[in-house]
Length: 193
Image (cartoon, rainbow, N blue to C red; front, side, top):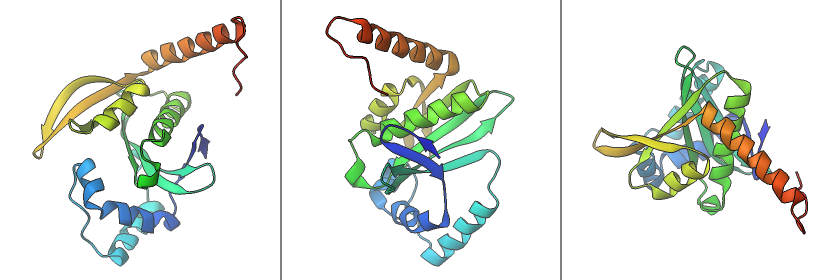
């Protein structure tokens, strides 16, 4: 388990299958992910889901996103891990709409980025998001990602974004220095962890 400020990232489990199936068959969520809605039956989906949990590919690391009180609200993943190039792709989906626009996605991305850069030797995390998904782009910008290009694929137009380890380390150093300055300024209280 990896704990953020508002969320916990944990390994996927079979009990997540119904939520995931519901989200994957939702046309709006599928559109935001630039994929067609899933059109298999739940028993078919469950069989494939169980198999993937038993035999996970080494280049894919899917995680469930839970609130601190244990509500499964979405998923995130880092995948296409390329050790030789030192990079991986990141994806996220908050499936439970009650948790949209409340900082859960930002916390999940920040928590996953921190985990990747602390626990691996990877030097770059990249992602793509639909041009039209400005909310996602704002979230990724808050987390330190910057645009580096565009991609048109299967009739969809994407913004490509990336975050390099050195850029992330610089942001971490700046945040620590900022909190030290806040703690020392007149009338300010030290930040609580």
